[in-house]
Image (cartoon, rainbow, N blue to C red; front, side, top):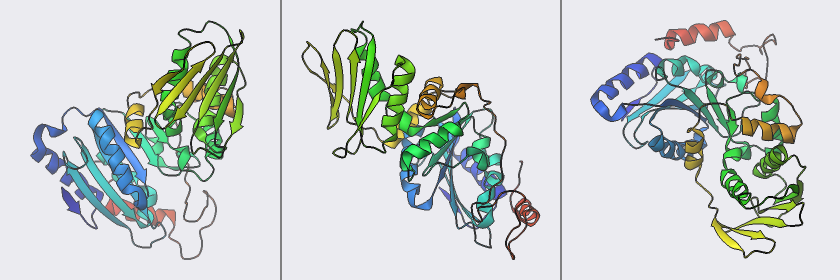
Length: 350
C-alpha cells in the first residue's frame, strides 16, 4: 500500500505503475475499470462491496471521494493498493477537496485501464442527471441505487427520464431472485395470466420495478397493495384465466410458493449483500433492454431502448446550483482560473 498526501494526478499515475511492477502477476487479466463515486461517510461500505465484486471480476478499482467543494484550496490525497485489502485488483482511493472535486476526471482519466470497458457506480443518492458528472459520460455502463434516494420512487422516475442504454440500478438487481422464481412458475403453467398483485411498502423501488416488469412481460396492469408491516417487498400474486392463483411470499430468507390445488413449496430467497448485487451487474456490459422495458412501463415513457447510449457532459456546479451562463457570486473563482489551476496540478492526458 502506498499513501500519497497533498499530491497530484501525475504522482498517482507514477506510484500506481511502480506498485504494479512490484506486484508482478497479481494485476494481469483485468476485465474492466470500475469507478466508484461515494461520500466519505460511505467509503468503507463501498470498499467492502467493491472487494466482493472485484473477486469475481478482476478490475482496476478507482474510488472517488468528493469533499468540501467550496473549499478555496484544492487538494488530492490518494491510497494505492495492489492485490491487498481490496482484493485481487488494482485499487486507487482518491479523496478530492475543493474545486478539484468538480473536475475529478482530470485525475481519473489517466488511470483508466487501457482497452477495457469502464463502469461507473454511484454508491449513494443517484445524480439528478448522469451527464452532470463527467465520470458517467465516459463510462460504458452506469450503476445507480434509487433505494438510497430521499424519495426512491421519484428517483426511479428520474432514472427513466434520464435513461440511456447502459444504465441500470441496484433496485433492479435486487429483484433478480424474485424474477427467477416467478418465471420458473411458468414451467408448469399454461393458462394466461390476467392479473397480478404486489404487496410491498409504499416507497419500495423494487416493488415498482417488479410491477413494471410484470406489466411489460405479461401485458397486464399489476395492482399495488401497500403495507407498513414489512420493510421490503413481501409477496407477488398472479391470477390466471383458468382460476388458478400463484403466490410467492417471502419470510426470513425463504419464499413460500403457493398454487391452487398443489402443496406449498419452500424456496430460497435470501437478501444478498451489495457486493454480490454489484458483481451481478458487472457480468454484462451491454444495455439491459428488460430493465428499460420495466422503467418504461412504470414511467409511461416510450422508446427508452432507442435512445443514444452516448452522453454529452453538461456542466453544473453543485456548490452554487448554477448552470452555464449564470454569473458566479462575487469572490468565486472563474472557470478559466479553475481550469488553469487544475491543468497545472493534474495532467488531463498521459
